[in-house]
Image 1 (cartoon, rainbow, N blue to C red):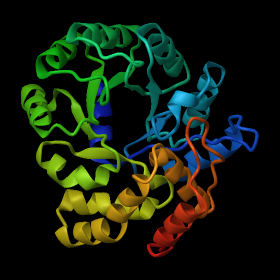
Image 2: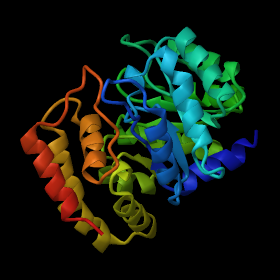
Image 3: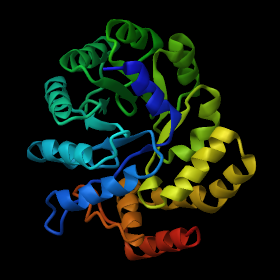
Image 4: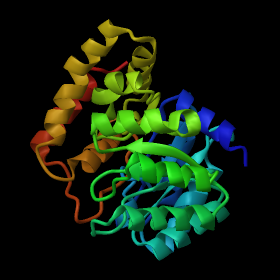
Length: 302
């Protein structure tokens, strides 16, 4: 695999985190998901994340995972790589990574390991085992209970050619600068904080050229407009959209735990692209919050 080309493709454009479609009975709806991937991959994006955090990776059954990744690969544009989420303990993550590779994914995103905080040596062994298990690209996602320091990350990058990316969901600016300065262009850097648009400007100055946009699920044109404004340093557009859309969206997101996902699915329903319910333990938006989101979307309709 051409890892340099993969890094270039990911870092050059906005990244999309499609929600995963579930039917009324809660089962995976492959037909609806296929239509979603066809729609979203028709836009000018760098990659699509299948079974990521916004795609409810944590609630997808082992008996469903292969179908989710295969459906994403089969129904995305050929020039838009699919990146599959993996996670949990090392053996489960390795198994999922191999299944994602067999299903046609071009890379995997290593979501946090399960529950425990771990020492650097343990996390290093975890990531190393995943890299050794596959030939496709591997992107490490730093957030919650998994943090790598620059030295550990450098050792992994030297050892594994297929470690292609670092996604930051921590928000530690000093750490991000140290990592970017230590590894340079060896990795592609991705913004991964919730509502990443709010952090896009300062992160761009650190070499983080792209981020995953959850709102791309329901306002793709607006998401691309904002990304374009960030890359071109169009301060007027950035300020306008932050004030009118993204900051009010964050206020809504923060009203209840789990809204970062259920709000995105609600937005998809509002724009006529329903993806079905979220799975427990997540909860749906209440009537008031749903109405607030609908009004916010309506005020930014094209």
